[in-house]
Image 1 (tube, rainbow, N blue to C red):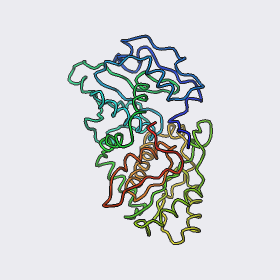
Image 2 (image 1 turned 60 degrees about the horizontal axis):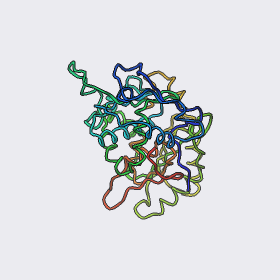
Image 3 (image 1 turned 45 degrees about the vertical axis):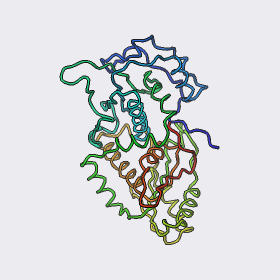
Image 4 (image 1 turned 90 degrees about the vertical axis):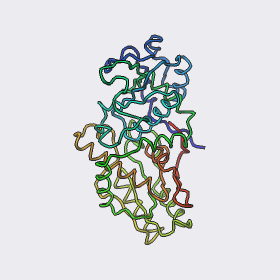
Length: 346
C-alpha cells in the first residue's frame, strides 16, 4: 500500500493557525467570535496535515457562519481548485453559500475561465446592495499560515468520497465561452483525435527541489501502462496524447512508445518546458500566467474527454481530472488509472 500523498508540505515549516482579525478582510469570522486564536503548537513539524485537521477540529466549536469565503491564492491551479471544490461540498453540507475571493489569485479572475453558479460564486450574496449581513468563515492559506476555516474544510473533506466530490466538481467546472474558444484553438492545434489515451506526466517542483512531495514515476511505467491499455478491446487503435510540464519527459516517453507500441499515433504540445515550478509561474506577468492557465485547462479537457487517462494521484492534477471524468461513454466505463497512489480527498 502506498502512503497518502500530502496535498502540500507542512513538514517544510510548522503550519500555523492564523488568528486575530484577518487584515485582508473587514468581515469578522465566527471563529474569532468564539475564542482566541489557538496556539501555534496545534500544528507541529512532526505531525501530518490529517492530524493537524483532527487536532484543530476537536478544539474548534462549530462556526455560526452565514457564508464561506474561499481565497484563491498563489498555489498551483490543481491544488487551489481541488480545495475550492472541497469547500463547496462543505458549504452544501451546512447550507451556506460558497464565495470565491480571487483578488489574489495567480491565474487572474475566476469569471474569465468559469461561469459562476450557486455552488460557488464570486461576490457574497449577503453583502450586496449595501447590506452587511455577512459573517464569513474565511478559508485562506498564506505561506505557512492558515485561517481556522481551512482546518474546518480539511477535516470535513476527509469523509467525502470521490463520487460525492465529483458531483460538485462538475457543477463548478463550467467554462466560459471565451475560455472554451481559447481551449478549442489550442486543442485543434494539437490535433486531438476522437479516440485517445491521455497520459499525464508531472515533473518539476512536485518531484524535485525543496518542495518535493513524492518520487517521480519512471517513464517506463507510463509506457508499459499505455501498452497494456492498447491491448484492451475498445482501446485498440487509439492515439496517445501526452500532457506534461516537462518536454524532455514527453520525448523520452515518445521514444519508448515507438519501441514497444510501434505505429501508435502520438500527440503532444511542442512548447519548450522544463517542469512546473510554482515560484517561477508566480513571477511571470499576469498575461503570461493567463496563457499558461489556458494551456493547462486545454490539457485538462484533453484528459477528461479521453477514453482512458493514465496519471498519478500523488498529483493534484490527477486527482482533479479523476473527479471530472466520472461519466460513461456508451457501455465503456471511462477509467482514470493512477500509476502511484490511490485517490484520496486531500
